Length: 500
Image 1 (tube, helix red, strand yellow):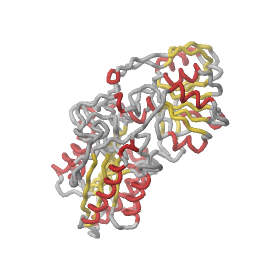
Image 2: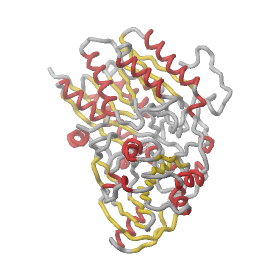
Image 3: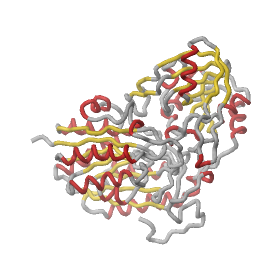
Image 4: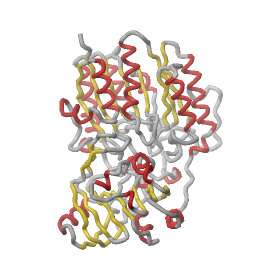
């Protein structure tokens, strides 16, 4: 008989300092997808759910997809949203299946739960104690004992920007299929080091993380272990399990995995100071960009980064670029539904003055929203939709809401109704702007922009703008974090057996 799988996606990276709530309507165009409509939306895409669908097809298995829920990073997931998603997955599994393939993030925090993924897996284990479960996680997962104890196989992205989402699911799925066939008996070991790593410093493509991730990849690809994953963690979350962690999947015996685990984590700990971002003042960064020759020059505003929970309406970097007289600039997207409405009402070709952005306060950082007055001509109005053609999330449909372009002369500003991380050139090309022909490209991103924009960039300048995704960890007040935790306790020393 054909095996039956349950495939599900429940993904959210929660910035507990973000003022943006995360209700069920945030998880997709009008809420989470489920059932037959979810499969064509994800099949063939470079997503973890897409990778699991591919595994199920190759295995000749029947499968259902009861929940396909993914939201832009933001604040706490509401209790109602979490329960709707979790119940949808658990209830489908309770109907009976041979395995579950779960695309999760690993950093979900709800109003009533600090470990959203661990609680989901615990609930599944309560109704299906022996069910084989494969989990694909984001590189920024916050690992917990509950997550590891309640699944069979776990893998994490090897890249940031995340261009291997589907492959991460394939890695987990292939190991699970071997287990179902009786070829292997997976066992997992995991550990962490009590340290924060900056998302601007821990990308696996560069040191200090590169050779740590390379070591994990080599161990898995050579067959020394079944799977090996390193997780940089997500520092914009005030929760007890903040850390840098790793998970190794072994066949039956765990000795090899324990050795590799200690090597990976010890190497990260030895470099803990190199994982911290040391920024500069914004005016100096823009001044330095102004002196650069050629273009495009990417101005990456990482303080207001949608993919880390930013509001996408902080105007500090745009204001500084205008103040210093930068010309031939494309900027955005800026999320401001009211300004979009104003431009649509005025119509293409009309001259309007906007009070742009700055609509949202960020009390966790004592930041007040500060709009920027800009005047220009409405150049373009679109539905804000396009299909990703770049290497990250390839094939997925981006929906920015209604979108309009304001041309001030020196700067073209893309303004949208919805937040959208600019990791693909489509945020500009869909409204008739070729960023490759611009001197400056000002985007709100920390690292994902590199997937689409690094290939066209002559220079990249990181801009320390304001916002709740700032890379300056000193700006955040942590109340619930583990103690001790580097760098807050800078003299922290580990004992020989701590912690693993």
